Length: 154
Length: 137
Image (cartoon, rainbow over the protein chains, first blue to last red):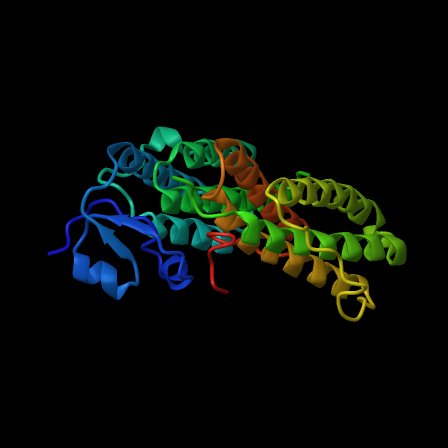
C-alpha cells in the first residue's frame, strides 16, 4: 500500500521534465516508476513547507472552482495539476472559511499564496523543493493575472 | 565545499536576454499595438542583461554576446506576441536551474526572475502553466 506521505513533483508533467525532484516517502517502487528519486530521510522543515503548500493549494483550487461569474475551467485544471504535483490534497478538506465567491478576493488570495511559496522557496533545504516551490509560485501568479483580466481587472 | 558552478546556466539565461532585447526592440519599433508593452519589456531585459553580464564576468567567465539576429523578424502583431510568449517560456526553463545555484541572494533573484518571466509569458498571451519552467510541454 502506498501511504500518503510527502511527495514533491508527483505530477507526471513535472517528473517527466526530468527535474530530478526531491521525493520523500511513498512507496519507492512507485516513485521510481514515476522517474522520481526516493529519499528516506526528508528534512522535517521541508516536509512542513510541502504540507503547507498542499493545504493552501487545495483551498485555492476550491475557491477558483466555486467562482460563477467568470470562466475558470482551464485555471482549475492548472491548480489541480499543481495540487497533484504536491502529492494531492492533505487530509481534511479546505475549510469553507478559506474560500470566497468574490473574484477580487480570490485573486488576492492567489497572489498572497504565490508570495508565500516564493518565501518558502528561499527557505527550502532541498534544491529540488526550492525549484518546485518557485515554479509553483510562478504558475499561481499566472493564474491570478489571468483570472484578474477575465474579471475585468488589469 | 563549493557547489556546482552557476556559470553555464547564467550564460544560457544571458543568451535569452540578448534575444529578448532584440525581439522586444524590434516589436516596439514595428508594431504600434505592442509599442508600450514592448518598450517596457525592453527596459527590463536590458537591465537583466547587464546584471547577468556582470555576474558572469564576476565569476571569471567571458559573457556570451548577442547574435546579429534571431531568425526572421515577426511580420504581424500575432506573430510577435507568439514569439515573445515563447521566449518568456524559454526564459522560465532557463531560470529554474538557477534557483538552486549560488548564494541566498542569487536564489532570491532567480525566484523573482522566474515569476517575472512567467507573468511576461502570460502578458504576451501564453496560457497559465502549472509549473512554469518545469513543464515539458
